[in-house]
Length: 389
Image 1 (cartoon, rainbow, N blue to C red):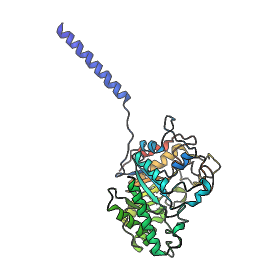
Image 2 (cartoon, rainbow, N blue to C red):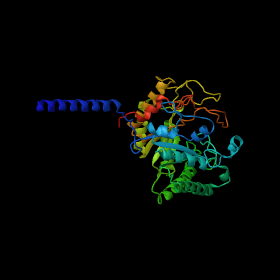
Image 3 (cartoon, rainbow, N blue to C red):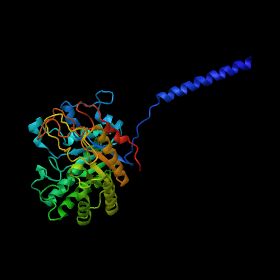
Image 4 (spheres, helix red, strand yellow):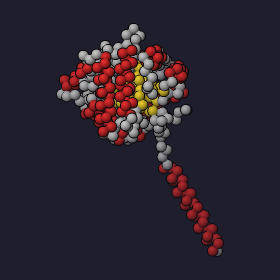
């Protein structure tokens, strides 16, 4: 009888433990894949967030609760934040009453938010008071009368000052872009590439690079240097001019903008091949530092959108599902080519009451990570997808 009771008790305990084990399995939550920047940079340009939130923009998590987009994106796989810096955008006074956004104070706030959320930072110094891109690279007003030697010194001192300021706040960036989409050069007209002559441009780049390297000698964080050209079809010619003609070799990453609307490199196979070729030829890591894809053909405001939905790659449409699919396949293509990372341009530039030189709202809200009500879109999942390395 005693033995039988012991046996019954043992069976009861076994069944109880089994039930508890099954219950634990049922409530087990699988954490999404999160990459470290050393393996692959999953970046987002969040330069607009401060301004959008100041003008009524709200971001939500999956439950519909208002959230901090820095924290929310990090929770969903983002490991780096890109932020642009303008020298002195005085033109903002007519819009906001002061020089308010994308200057050093605003950028400091953005970097602080990124670091607090657990992400690294790519500081994109435009060396201009306004947008710098392939079509325009206006010299800051404060430097406009400078000759080449004075301009070199101005770039050096400014870059060093910015980094020293950030270091004093414990906000040193892990990546630094010396310029933004510098297809035609920097600080026009002095640093413009004329008749395939990269000399002045190269000297100005070298000044910015030297400032970063000099800063790094006394910094625990030693920023990796990115040089930036728009579109893969331009990268070979441009990198050859910078490296082999101008002799600018002391940088770490060749950063490239890839937008389907302006790209001549159409297929994912061609993207992979181009990245492989660039890496082998120039010995630099490759990173896509700007890209995007639309999730809708609609507008949330009267501000005309920039990316055309009529030039979408074959086999895709502007939809929530295809936005995710495109970003997954683009990311895999970059990885297959040996690329270091991807940074999505302005995923939080949702429509709000924010005004700029051309309109009120957003010209990018059809490409964001959040819909017109601020709810997250499926595209966010591309950052935690399991990729083949």
